[in-house]
Image (cartoon, rainbow, N blue to C red; front, side, top):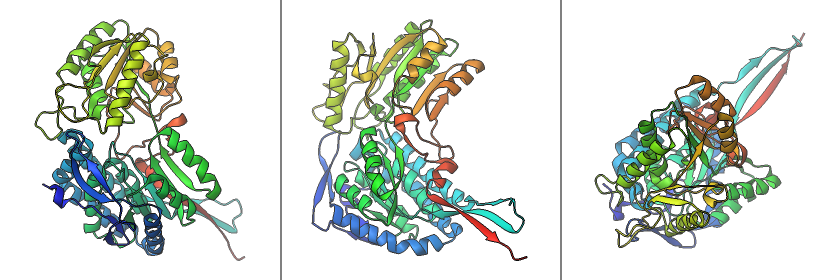
Length: 484
Protein backbone atom coordinates (compact mmCIF):
# COMPACT_ATOMS: atom_id res chain seq x y z
CA UNK A 1 0.00 0.00 0.00
CA UNK A 2 1.12 3.54 -0.74
CA UNK A 3 2.76 5.56 1.99
CA UNK A 4 2.80 9.33 2.10
CA UNK A 5 6.16 9.36 0.32
CA UNK A 6 4.82 7.23 -2.56
CA UNK A 7 1.95 9.47 -3.58
CA UNK A 8 2.35 11.36 -6.87
CA UNK A 9 2.39 15.06 -6.06
CA UNK A 10 2.91 16.85 -9.36
CA UNK A 11 0.73 17.95 -12.24
CA UNK A 12 0.75 15.92 -15.45
CA UNK A 13 1.02 18.03 -18.61
CA UNK A 14 1.96 16.93 -22.12
CA UNK A 15 3.19 13.54 -20.94
CA UNK A 16 5.38 14.91 -18.12
CA UNK A 17 5.02 15.19 -14.36
CA UNK A 18 5.63 18.86 -13.49
CA UNK A 19 5.74 21.20 -10.54
CA UNK A 20 3.60 24.32 -10.66
CA UNK A 21 5.11 27.03 -12.86
CA UNK A 22 5.16 29.40 -9.90
CA UNK A 23 6.45 26.73 -7.52
CA UNK A 24 3.30 26.73 -5.38
CA UNK A 25 2.22 23.80 -3.20
CA UNK A 26 -0.83 22.88 -1.13
CA UNK A 27 -1.12 20.66 1.93
CA UNK A 28 -3.49 17.68 1.80
CA UNK A 29 -5.11 17.18 5.22
CA UNK A 30 -6.40 13.94 6.77
CA UNK A 31 -9.86 14.82 8.16
CA UNK A 32 -9.66 12.03 10.74
CA UNK A 33 -6.71 13.49 12.63
CA UNK A 34 -6.02 16.86 10.92
CA UNK A 35 -2.46 15.87 10.01
CA UNK A 36 -0.80 16.73 6.70
CA UNK A 37 -0.58 13.72 4.39
CA UNK A 38 1.41 15.32 1.59
CA UNK A 39 2.22 18.58 -0.17
CA UNK A 40 1.15 18.69 -3.83
CA UNK A 41 1.87 21.09 -6.67
CA UNK A 42 -0.61 23.95 -6.76
CA UNK A 43 -0.63 26.44 -9.58
CA UNK A 44 -3.06 28.49 -11.59
CA UNK A 45 -3.85 29.93 -14.97
CA UNK A 46 -0.38 29.57 -16.50
CA UNK A 47 -0.37 25.85 -15.73
CA UNK A 48 -3.85 25.50 -17.19
CA UNK A 49 -2.75 27.33 -20.34
CA UNK A 50 0.15 24.89 -20.77
CA UNK A 51 -2.19 21.95 -20.35
CA UNK A 52 -4.67 23.39 -22.88
CA UNK A 53 -1.81 23.85 -25.35
CA UNK A 54 -0.86 20.19 -24.91
CA UNK A 55 -4.45 18.97 -25.27
CA UNK A 56 -5.01 21.07 -28.40
CA UNK A 57 -1.80 19.76 -29.97
CA UNK A 58 -2.76 16.15 -29.20
CA UNK A 59 -6.37 16.42 -30.40
CA UNK A 60 -5.96 15.81 -34.16
CA UNK A 61 -4.03 12.55 -33.70
CA UNK A 62 -6.28 11.31 -30.90
CA UNK A 63 -9.42 12.10 -32.91
CA UNK A 64 -7.96 10.10 -35.80
CA UNK A 65 -7.19 7.11 -33.56
CA UNK A 66 -9.71 4.31 -34.05
CA UNK A 67 -12.35 3.74 -31.42
CA UNK A 68 -10.91 0.25 -30.98
CA UNK A 69 -7.43 1.53 -30.17
CA UNK A 70 -8.84 4.12 -27.77
CA UNK A 71 -10.85 1.32 -26.16
CA UNK A 72 -7.73 -0.75 -25.52
CA UNK A 73 -6.24 2.06 -23.43
CA UNK A 74 -9.44 2.67 -21.47
CA UNK A 75 -9.98 -1.03 -20.80
CA UNK A 76 -6.39 -1.44 -19.65
CA UNK A 77 -6.93 1.56 -17.36
CA UNK A 78 -9.87 -0.26 -15.78
CA UNK A 79 -7.77 -3.38 -15.27
CA UNK A 80 -4.96 -1.42 -13.62
CA UNK A 81 -7.43 0.39 -11.35
CA UNK A 82 -8.76 -2.95 -10.15
CA UNK A 83 -5.24 -4.24 -9.56
CA UNK A 84 -4.38 -1.10 -7.58
CA UNK A 85 -7.76 -0.65 -5.91
CA UNK A 86 -6.43 -1.16 -2.37
CA UNK A 87 -3.77 1.53 -2.82
CA UNK A 88 -6.14 4.02 -4.44
CA UNK A 89 -8.81 3.37 -1.80
CA UNK A 90 -6.38 3.88 1.06
CA UNK A 91 -5.34 7.26 -0.31
CA UNK A 92 -8.99 8.19 -0.83
CA UNK A 93 -9.86 7.34 2.79
CA UNK A 94 -6.85 9.20 4.14
CA UNK A 95 -7.67 12.45 2.35
CA UNK A 96 -11.48 12.31 2.17
CA UNK A 97 -12.47 10.35 5.28
CA UNK A 98 -14.95 7.76 4.03
CA UNK A 99 -14.56 4.18 5.33
CA UNK A 100 -12.09 2.02 3.43
CA UNK A 101 -14.77 -0.36 2.14
CA UNK A 102 -16.68 2.58 0.63
CA UNK A 103 -13.47 3.95 -0.88
CA UNK A 104 -12.67 0.63 -2.52
CA UNK A 105 -16.23 0.35 -3.80
CA UNK A 106 -15.89 3.81 -5.34
CA UNK A 107 -12.62 2.86 -7.01
CA UNK A 108 -14.11 -0.29 -8.52
CA UNK A 109 -17.16 1.66 -9.71
CA UNK A 110 -14.83 4.11 -11.47
CA UNK A 111 -12.98 1.20 -13.08
CA UNK A 112 -16.32 -0.10 -14.35
CA UNK A 113 -16.97 3.34 -15.84
CA UNK A 114 -13.73 3.24 -17.82
CA UNK A 115 -14.57 -0.23 -19.07
CA UNK A 116 -18.13 0.74 -20.03
CA UNK A 117 -16.99 3.67 -22.13
CA UNK A 118 -14.15 1.63 -23.64
CA UNK A 119 -16.84 -0.57 -25.15
CA UNK A 120 -19.44 2.13 -25.77
CA UNK A 121 -16.99 4.22 -27.79
CA UNK A 122 -17.10 1.49 -30.43
CA UNK A 123 -20.83 2.05 -30.80
CA UNK A 124 -20.95 5.76 -31.58
CA UNK A 125 -23.10 5.12 -34.61
CA UNK A 126 -24.23 7.67 -37.17
CA UNK A 127 -27.35 7.07 -39.25
CA UNK A 128 -28.59 7.00 -42.83
CA UNK A 129 -31.58 9.30 -43.40
CA UNK A 130 -34.00 8.52 -46.26
CA UNK A 131 -33.99 11.45 -48.73
CA UNK A 132 -37.08 13.14 -50.18
CA UNK A 133 -35.13 13.84 -53.37
CA UNK A 134 -33.63 10.66 -54.76
CA UNK A 135 -30.78 12.61 -56.30
CA UNK A 136 -29.47 13.21 -52.80
CA UNK A 137 -28.15 11.05 -49.97
CA UNK A 138 -28.30 12.13 -46.32
CA UNK A 139 -26.42 10.84 -43.33
CA UNK A 140 -25.46 12.03 -39.84
CA UNK A 141 -22.08 11.35 -38.27
CA UNK A 142 -20.49 11.95 -34.88
CA UNK A 143 -17.56 14.31 -34.39
CA UNK A 144 -15.64 14.72 -31.08
CA UNK A 145 -16.30 18.13 -29.58
CA UNK A 146 -12.59 18.93 -29.04
CA UNK A 147 -10.63 19.87 -25.92
CA UNK A 148 -12.66 19.33 -22.74
CA UNK A 149 -12.03 21.03 -19.40
CA UNK A 150 -13.27 19.21 -16.31
CA UNK A 151 -13.74 20.35 -12.70
CA UNK A 152 -14.71 17.83 -10.02
CA UNK A 153 -15.36 17.93 -6.25
CA UNK A 154 -13.98 16.13 -3.22
CA UNK A 155 -16.86 13.87 -2.18
CA UNK A 156 -16.32 11.19 -4.85
CA UNK A 157 -12.83 12.11 -6.06
CA UNK A 158 -12.32 8.99 -8.21
CA UNK A 159 -15.85 8.24 -9.42
CA UNK A 160 -16.79 11.73 -10.57
CA UNK A 161 -13.67 12.41 -12.70
CA UNK A 162 -14.04 8.98 -14.32
CA UNK A 163 -17.52 9.95 -15.54
CA UNK A 164 -15.99 12.83 -17.49
CA UNK A 165 -12.56 11.61 -18.52
CA UNK A 166 -13.61 8.14 -19.76
CA UNK A 167 -16.39 9.23 -22.16
CA UNK A 168 -14.38 12.22 -23.40
CA UNK A 169 -11.43 10.02 -24.30
CA UNK A 170 -13.68 7.33 -25.77
CA UNK A 171 -15.28 9.94 -28.03
CA UNK A 172 -11.90 11.16 -29.32
CA UNK A 173 -11.69 14.34 -27.23
CA UNK A 174 -8.64 15.44 -25.29
CA UNK A 175 -8.88 16.53 -21.66
CA UNK A 176 -7.60 18.99 -19.09
CA UNK A 177 -8.79 17.90 -15.65
CA UNK A 178 -8.76 19.73 -12.34
CA UNK A 179 -9.27 17.58 -9.21
CA UNK A 180 -10.53 19.00 -5.94
CA UNK A 181 -7.98 20.75 -3.72
CA UNK A 182 -8.74 18.45 -0.79
CA UNK A 183 -8.49 15.12 -2.61
CA UNK A 184 -5.81 15.10 -5.33
CA UNK A 185 -3.89 12.01 -4.21
CA UNK A 186 -6.39 9.30 -5.14
CA UNK A 187 -7.09 11.15 -8.39
CA UNK A 188 -3.40 11.16 -9.29
CA UNK A 189 -3.14 7.44 -8.50
CA UNK A 190 -6.09 6.83 -10.82
CA UNK A 191 -4.43 8.99 -13.46
CA UNK A 192 -1.25 6.91 -13.21
CA UNK A 193 -3.36 3.98 -14.41
CA UNK A 194 -4.27 5.93 -17.55
CA UNK A 195 -0.61 6.77 -18.17
CA UNK A 196 0.56 3.19 -17.59
CA UNK A 197 -2.19 1.96 -19.92
CA UNK A 198 -0.45 3.76 -22.78
CA UNK A 199 -2.16 7.12 -23.04
CA UNK A 200 -0.28 9.32 -25.55
CA UNK A 201 1.24 12.60 -24.30
CA UNK A 202 -1.15 15.55 -24.15
CA UNK A 203 -4.32 13.50 -24.57
CA UNK A 204 -5.22 13.88 -20.89
CA UNK A 205 -3.63 16.39 -18.53
CA UNK A 206 -3.94 17.22 -14.83
CA UNK A 207 -3.80 20.74 -13.42
CA UNK A 208 -4.02 21.41 -9.70
CA UNK A 209 -4.57 24.97 -8.61
CA UNK A 210 -6.93 27.82 -7.93
CA UNK A 211 -10.35 26.88 -9.33
CA UNK A 212 -11.24 30.34 -10.60
CA UNK A 213 -7.91 30.82 -12.36
CA UNK A 214 -8.19 27.48 -14.10
CA UNK A 215 -11.81 28.18 -15.07
CA UNK A 216 -10.66 31.55 -16.45
CA UNK A 217 -8.28 29.70 -18.75
CA UNK A 218 -11.00 27.29 -19.85
CA UNK A 219 -13.30 30.15 -20.79
CA UNK A 220 -10.62 32.32 -22.40
CA UNK A 221 -9.23 29.69 -24.73
CA UNK A 222 -11.19 28.95 -27.89
CA UNK A 223 -9.60 25.50 -28.06
CA UNK A 224 -11.63 24.45 -25.01
CA UNK A 225 -14.95 23.60 -26.62
CA UNK A 226 -16.66 22.05 -23.60
CA UNK A 227 -16.57 22.27 -19.81
CA UNK A 228 -17.87 19.49 -17.60
CA UNK A 229 -18.49 20.44 -13.97
CA UNK A 230 -19.79 18.68 -10.89
CA UNK A 231 -20.46 20.89 -7.88
CA UNK A 232 -22.84 23.40 -6.37
CA UNK A 233 -25.80 24.93 -8.16
CA UNK A 234 -24.49 28.44 -7.40
CA UNK A 235 -21.20 27.76 -9.21
CA UNK A 236 -23.05 26.00 -12.02
CA UNK A 237 -25.15 29.10 -12.64
CA UNK A 238 -22.00 31.21 -12.80
CA UNK A 239 -20.52 28.83 -15.37
CA UNK A 240 -23.69 29.14 -17.47
CA UNK A 241 -23.38 32.93 -17.43
CA UNK A 242 -19.69 32.82 -18.33
CA UNK A 243 -20.21 30.28 -21.13
CA UNK A 244 -22.22 32.77 -23.20
CA UNK A 245 -19.31 34.75 -24.65
CA UNK A 246 -17.60 31.74 -26.18
CA UNK A 247 -20.78 29.64 -26.57
CA UNK A 248 -19.04 26.89 -24.62
CA UNK A 249 -20.84 23.60 -24.32
CA UNK A 250 -21.56 22.63 -20.71
CA UNK A 251 -22.35 19.49 -18.79
CA UNK A 252 -23.44 20.36 -15.25
CA UNK A 253 -24.16 17.92 -12.44
CA UNK A 254 -25.27 20.20 -9.61
CA UNK A 255 -26.96 20.13 -6.22
CA UNK A 256 -29.71 17.88 -4.95
CA UNK A 257 -32.26 17.56 -2.15
CA UNK A 258 -33.65 14.07 -2.67
CA UNK A 259 -36.87 12.92 -1.02
CA UNK A 260 -37.17 9.34 0.21
CA UNK A 261 -40.82 8.31 0.39
CA UNK A 262 -42.07 5.24 2.23
CA UNK A 263 -45.59 3.90 1.62
CA UNK A 264 -47.40 1.74 4.19
CA UNK A 265 -47.15 -1.52 2.22
CA UNK A 266 -43.33 -1.47 2.33
CA UNK A 267 -41.30 -3.69 4.67
CA UNK A 268 -40.64 -1.14 7.42
CA UNK A 269 -37.54 -2.73 8.95
CA UNK A 270 -35.95 -3.36 5.57
CA UNK A 271 -36.64 0.15 4.31
CA UNK A 272 -35.42 1.79 7.54
CA UNK A 273 -32.13 -0.03 7.20
CA UNK A 274 -31.79 1.00 3.54
CA UNK A 275 -32.67 4.58 4.47
CA UNK A 276 -30.06 4.78 7.22
CA UNK A 277 -27.35 3.32 4.99
CA UNK A 278 -28.32 5.68 2.17
CA UNK A 279 -28.38 8.73 4.42
CA UNK A 280 -25.17 8.21 6.37
CA UNK A 281 -23.03 6.86 3.53
CA UNK A 282 -20.15 9.32 3.22
CA UNK A 283 -21.78 11.37 6.01
CA UNK A 284 -24.59 12.41 3.70
CA UNK A 285 -21.97 14.18 1.54
CA UNK A 286 -23.51 12.70 -1.59
CA UNK A 287 -25.37 14.70 -4.24
CA UNK A 288 -28.02 11.99 -4.60
CA UNK A 289 -28.25 11.16 -0.88
CA UNK A 290 -31.80 11.18 0.51
CA UNK A 291 -32.25 14.43 2.41
CA UNK A 292 -35.95 14.45 3.30
CA UNK A 293 -37.64 11.30 4.62
CA UNK A 294 -41.40 11.21 4.11
CA UNK A 295 -42.99 8.22 5.86
CA UNK A 296 -46.67 7.32 5.74
CA UNK A 297 -48.35 8.08 9.05
CA UNK A 298 -49.49 4.47 9.45
CA UNK A 299 -45.87 3.26 9.81
CA UNK A 300 -44.07 6.44 10.81
CA UNK A 301 -43.64 5.60 14.49
CA UNK A 302 -42.21 2.14 13.79
CA UNK A 303 -39.94 3.44 11.04
CA UNK A 304 -38.58 6.23 13.26
CA UNK A 305 -37.83 3.90 16.16
CA UNK A 306 -35.90 1.49 13.94
CA UNK A 307 -34.03 4.29 12.17
CA UNK A 308 -32.98 5.90 15.46
CA UNK A 309 -31.74 2.57 16.83
CA UNK A 310 -29.75 1.84 13.66
CA UNK A 311 -28.25 5.35 13.57
CA UNK A 312 -27.12 5.06 17.19
CA UNK A 313 -25.35 1.77 16.44
CA UNK A 314 -23.32 3.09 13.50
CA UNK A 315 -19.61 2.88 14.26
CA UNK A 316 -17.96 6.28 13.91
CA UNK A 317 -14.21 6.57 13.49
CA UNK A 318 -11.14 6.70 11.27
CA UNK A 319 -12.10 5.15 7.95
CA UNK A 320 -8.93 3.02 7.93
CA UNK A 321 -10.00 1.17 11.09
CA UNK A 322 -11.78 -2.17 10.89
CA UNK A 323 -15.57 -2.05 11.16
CA UNK A 324 -15.93 1.75 10.89
CA UNK A 325 -19.18 2.64 9.09
CA UNK A 326 -19.05 6.44 9.26
CA UNK A 327 -15.83 8.43 8.98
CA UNK A 328 -15.16 12.11 9.61
CA UNK A 329 -16.68 14.89 7.57
CA UNK A 330 -14.24 16.10 4.94
CA UNK A 331 -13.23 19.43 6.53
CA UNK A 332 -14.01 21.77 9.39
CA UNK A 333 -16.29 23.97 7.23
CA UNK A 334 -18.57 20.99 6.62
CA UNK A 335 -18.71 20.31 10.35
CA UNK A 336 -19.58 23.94 11.06
CA UNK A 337 -22.32 23.95 8.42
CA UNK A 338 -23.91 20.84 9.95
CA UNK A 339 -23.86 22.48 13.36
CA UNK A 340 -25.59 25.57 11.95
CA UNK A 341 -28.27 23.46 10.24
CA UNK A 342 -29.06 21.65 13.48
CA UNK A 343 -29.16 24.83 15.55
CA UNK A 344 -31.50 26.40 13.00
CA UNK A 345 -33.76 23.33 13.04
CA UNK A 346 -33.87 23.34 16.82
CA UNK A 347 -34.76 27.02 16.88
CA UNK A 348 -37.76 26.23 14.66
CA UNK A 349 -39.00 23.38 16.85
CA UNK A 350 -37.15 20.29 15.64
CA UNK A 351 -36.73 17.43 18.10
CA UNK A 352 -33.35 15.67 18.17
CA UNK A 353 -33.86 11.93 18.56
CA UNK A 354 -30.20 10.95 18.36
CA UNK A 355 -26.95 12.75 17.62
CA UNK A 356 -27.24 16.47 17.02
CA UNK A 357 -23.68 17.45 17.95
CA UNK A 358 -20.01 17.12 17.12
CA UNK A 359 -18.70 13.87 18.54
CA UNK A 360 -16.81 14.19 21.83
CA UNK A 361 -15.17 10.78 21.47
CA UNK A 362 -12.24 12.05 19.40
CA UNK A 363 -9.49 14.47 20.33
CA UNK A 364 -9.01 15.52 16.71
CA UNK A 365 -10.84 15.20 13.42
CA UNK A 366 -14.12 16.39 11.94
CA UNK A 367 -16.54 13.90 13.46
CA UNK A 368 -20.27 14.55 13.76
CA UNK A 369 -22.70 12.11 15.35
CA UNK A 370 -25.26 10.55 12.97
CA UNK A 371 -28.41 12.55 13.63
CA UNK A 372 -32.13 11.84 13.34
CA UNK A 373 -34.68 14.63 13.85
CA UNK A 374 -38.47 14.91 13.94
CA UNK A 375 -40.98 17.76 14.20
CA UNK A 376 -39.57 19.11 10.96
CA UNK A 377 -41.18 21.90 8.94
CA UNK A 378 -40.54 23.90 5.79
CA UNK A 379 -39.16 26.92 7.62
CA UNK A 380 -35.98 25.05 8.49
CA UNK A 381 -32.87 25.51 6.36
CA UNK A 382 -32.32 21.77 6.25
CA UNK A 383 -35.52 21.53 4.19
CA UNK A 384 -34.52 24.19 1.66
CA UNK A 385 -30.71 24.13 1.38
CA UNK A 386 -28.72 21.18 0.08
CA UNK A 387 -27.60 19.76 3.45
CA UNK A 388 -24.57 17.57 2.60
CA UNK A 389 -24.68 16.49 6.24
CA UNK A 390 -25.28 13.36 8.38
CA UNK A 391 -28.77 14.49 9.36
CA UNK A 392 -31.96 12.52 8.75
CA UNK A 393 -35.17 14.62 9.01
CA UNK A 394 -38.34 12.49 9.17
CA UNK A 395 -41.80 13.80 8.26
CA UNK A 396 -45.24 12.17 8.03
CA UNK A 397 -47.66 12.11 5.09
CA UNK A 398 -51.01 10.49 4.36
CA UNK A 399 -51.97 10.92 0.68
CA UNK A 400 -50.14 10.29 -2.59
CA UNK A 401 -51.08 13.67 -4.09
CA UNK A 402 -49.91 15.41 -0.92
CA UNK A 403 -46.50 13.75 -0.90
CA UNK A 404 -45.95 14.23 -4.63
CA UNK A 405 -46.48 17.96 -4.20
CA UNK A 406 -44.19 18.14 -1.15
CA UNK A 407 -41.45 16.11 -2.83
CA UNK A 408 -41.45 18.41 -5.87
CA UNK A 409 -41.56 21.65 -3.86
CA UNK A 410 -37.87 22.43 -4.31
CA UNK A 411 -35.72 23.95 -7.06
CA UNK A 412 -33.65 20.75 -7.08
CA UNK A 413 -34.45 17.67 -9.13
CA UNK A 414 -31.51 15.28 -9.07
CA UNK A 415 -32.79 12.12 -7.35
CA UNK A 416 -35.84 10.73 -5.56
CA UNK A 417 -36.55 7.42 -3.83
CA UNK A 418 -39.80 5.53 -3.36
CA UNK A 419 -40.44 2.37 -1.38
CA UNK A 420 -43.66 0.53 -2.18
CA UNK A 421 -44.86 -2.86 -3.42
CA UNK A 422 -47.85 -1.33 -5.20
CA UNK A 423 -47.23 -1.14 -8.95
CA UNK A 424 -49.77 1.64 -9.45
CA UNK A 425 -48.21 3.82 -6.77
CA UNK A 426 -44.71 3.11 -8.10
CA UNK A 427 -45.78 4.09 -11.61
CA UNK A 428 -47.51 7.29 -10.51
CA UNK A 429 -44.53 8.34 -8.43
CA UNK A 430 -42.02 7.55 -11.19
CA UNK A 431 -44.04 9.61 -13.65
CA UNK A 432 -44.88 12.44 -11.24
CA UNK A 433 -41.61 13.06 -9.41
CA UNK A 434 -39.50 15.86 -10.88
CA UNK A 435 -36.09 14.21 -10.68
CA UNK A 436 -33.63 12.86 -13.20
CA UNK A 437 -32.89 9.72 -11.17
CA UNK A 438 -35.65 7.77 -9.43
CA UNK A 439 -35.01 4.69 -7.33
CA UNK A 440 -38.07 2.51 -6.78
CA UNK A 441 -37.14 0.12 -3.97
CA UNK A 442 -33.52 0.89 -4.93
CA UNK A 443 -31.46 3.18 -2.66
CA UNK A 444 -28.32 2.95 -4.84
CA UNK A 445 -29.42 3.39 -8.48
CA UNK A 446 -26.24 4.79 -10.09
CA UNK A 447 -24.49 2.45 -12.53
CA UNK A 448 -22.24 3.11 -15.55
CA UNK A 449 -24.70 1.89 -18.17
CA UNK A 450 -27.58 4.15 -17.07
CA UNK A 451 -27.92 7.95 -17.46
CA UNK A 452 -27.13 10.13 -14.43
CA UNK A 453 -28.21 13.76 -14.10
CA UNK A 454 -30.83 16.16 -12.84
CA UNK A 455 -33.84 18.27 -13.72
CA UNK A 456 -34.57 21.89 -12.77
CA UNK A 457 -31.60 23.49 -10.95
CA UNK A 458 -29.83 20.18 -10.47
CA UNK A 459 -28.01 20.35 -13.75
CA UNK A 460 -27.80 20.17 -17.52
CA UNK A 461 -27.14 17.04 -19.57
CA UNK A 462 -26.45 13.49 -18.47
CA UNK A 463 -23.40 11.48 -17.51
CA UNK A 464 -22.99 7.70 -17.87
CA UNK A 465 -25.04 5.52 -20.19
CA UNK A 466 -25.15 6.20 -23.93
CA UNK A 467 -26.10 9.79 -23.11
CA UNK A 468 -22.79 10.22 -21.29
CA UNK A 469 -20.86 9.41 -24.46
CA UNK A 470 -23.06 11.51 -26.72
CA UNK A 471 -22.34 14.55 -24.52
CA UNK A 472 -18.81 14.66 -26.00
CA UNK A 473 -19.88 14.59 -29.65
CA UNK A 474 -21.16 17.08 -32.16
CA UNK A 475 -23.56 15.71 -34.77
CA UNK A 476 -22.75 16.50 -38.39
CA UNK A 477 -25.37 16.29 -41.13
CA UNK A 478 -23.91 15.42 -44.54
CA UNK A 479 -25.97 15.81 -47.71
CA UNK A 480 -24.55 14.45 -50.98
CA UNK A 481 -25.94 15.45 -54.35
CA UNK A 482 -25.68 12.75 -57.04
CA UNK A 483 -25.00 13.21 -60.75
CA UNK A 484 -27.84 12.42 -63.13
